[in-house]
Image (cartoon, rainbow over the protein chains, first blue to last red):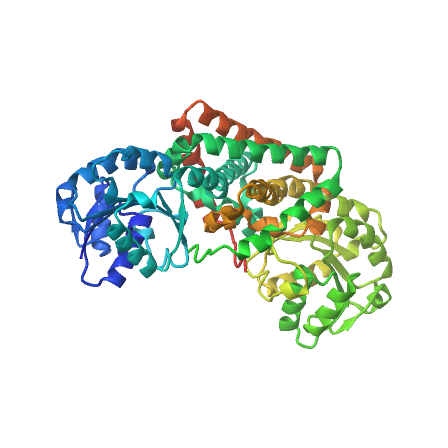
Length: 287
Length: 287
């Protein structure tokens, strides 16, 4: 079986490792505009050969794991280049624009819109590992617009990687992912920024940091190249979630200023519900 | 050797486990106003007997691991009850008020003000584990106000538990810990609150949550009984850090509304510096 992976970093590379486990004889063509990443992927054995779009007609399955702003530009070209029985899926964290970008493409039925809720704060081919997708949720949008046989092909791979599937429309996906993913990244980046700014006045402040700080600020290690376009594509939903977050922080601050620490206590107490909620989440490894 | 531990939850209980490893023959008296916690601690073997302040004269070392609002009230009484050669230390996350509370106490030199930067989001005796303090930072305030022999006694225990020591005055401690610890808890609690509120309109939103969300919201599992008093005692510093955090979130939102995604990118890029910073932090286990 022949695969092409466009964007051979953490996400694409982890698919490559899983595919090689499931299909030991599979040939994987790597395509990446970052030459050193592509070479690294070859050295690491993630891919069997470097390639470009001219190789796409050979592929039975094409995985696009590139920033969402690039994906909306490239997906139509990729569909132009593939054979009739080839499946193309993307893994982007926003789904509305990428679906629109090929809405009327003659090969729309060769495309499946996916979002595996999986990743780490690291990036690049060296961050890839087999098992990243084990037990994780994969959200599929507009499944009815993909050829049935190609849906089957995709599900076979996803099940082989141990993913659980959820179906959603792109608008609901983008609305809700803003809260459970995009907002978390902003809260973490801005927490890191706030503490770094304070550190400028006090060199050894980080000597006092513990595992709690490390956990809340972990996502601030994430790649700006990946995340800036996500925020741009999901602007309306992200701004709304950010406004609600700021509103809650403001009201917490006001309770403190009014010395209403019973109110503070009860807000925290109600939010402790997150314990039960998180028990229900298939988190798997954060590596 | 005889120890008394006042407050036998995650923190006090983990000291008990460490002490039993270092001093197998040590006798530990547990004191807790939560009768079921105290019984649980006895069943778990964290303590050898239940006790009250009448037992304090027998103790060579007293560890106070109770909420900071209770500590400021109880510490003077504890010092009233102990013998002349007994060391008392607390582990609270705020240090100014507790130091003031015994500033002029005749037994001030029997007290050492400590803050081990260690913990998990869990609480109670069953959450206690040996190794919680391994490689963690322990901040000691006003060390010069503690009798030299008793400082030595304390350092012997802390070194036995694998902690690294930092010395600071209470005001600097409270100012900086607001940023690297207290603010993280608020950002996490309010993130949880914001997403839970959104969930009310959309039951299966948490089906979309991944390890990134879990990491940023982990501290929202923390105990309100422990944290509300910390925020109250460190109000001025916490409100200031919260204001700076909100300011940064507002400016991020404004950049988005102005479609300045290069600005967004460069803010995230600068904050990626947190990678190098975190490498320097002795995080140890987050359990």
